[in-house]
Every structure is written in C-alpha cells, then in structure tokens.
Image (cartoon, rainbow, N blue to C red; front, side):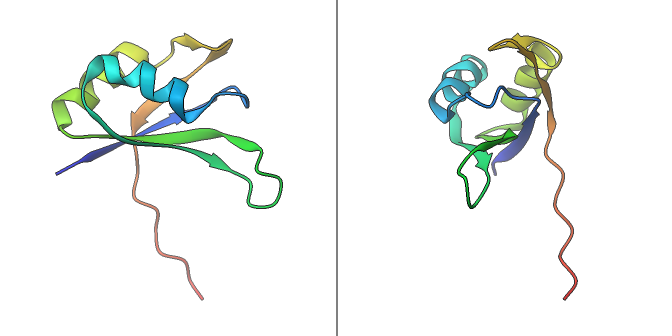
Length: 87
C-alpha cells in the first residue's frame, strides 16, 4: 500500500524532477506531481509525493518539514483525502 505526502509552499519554478530527487533520499518514490493551473499551466505552489511505505514517508516528513528548498520554507505532511464534491 502506498502513502501520499503533501508538500506545500513550493517555489513556482520547482519541477517534479527536483522534488523526486529531494524525496528519494528518504525512500522509494512511486510518483510525484506538482499541481498546476488548468489554463495557464503555472504551478499552484504545492504537490504530492507517493511513497511505497509508511516509514519512508514518516522519515521524509520529519526531515523536510520546515526546511528551505529552492528559496522557500516548505511544509510537508501526510496528504488528507479530499472530500467528495457535492453536485
């Protein structure tokens, strides 16, 4: 079972490759996504990292939360499930 980690306050120029390199120091990264605006394709300043195991995600959170990365102090924690949209 994989574990998703939220990373916020990213520099708008941060790439998925840079995040993958940073987080792979703490375990096997399954996927990385920087969330972008649908129209402009500009980063929204946050993203998600998916780890193979819970312990790897915990190590990354402990090591990186509040640290400076690409001139921004990033926020790292477990991702919360998004509630379903009401129609």
